[in-house]
Image (cartoon, rainbow, N blue to C red; front, top):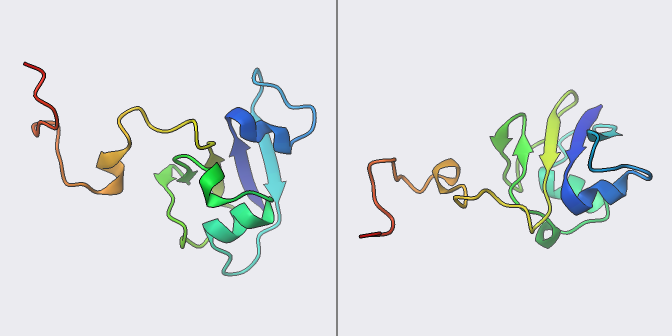
Length: 102
């Protein structure tokens, strides 16, 4: 079983869910199914998705989802405030400056 935690407009996948509760969809795992395949199985496209997480780590389309995994799904209009570049591997650190504010 995969626990899929839904946020924002993706909560509509669970009938009667509200923003004041934790919305979790339980889905049977399929061997060797990727994140992008699960998104398709849910009737969504990758364009519908924002930054999403597999067991607390930024998920990539080809990551394999296994029984017991936890997915956190956020819609396209809910992305990391910083763009998540430190999670996506841009190589910058807090000492690097992306924008000169002065």
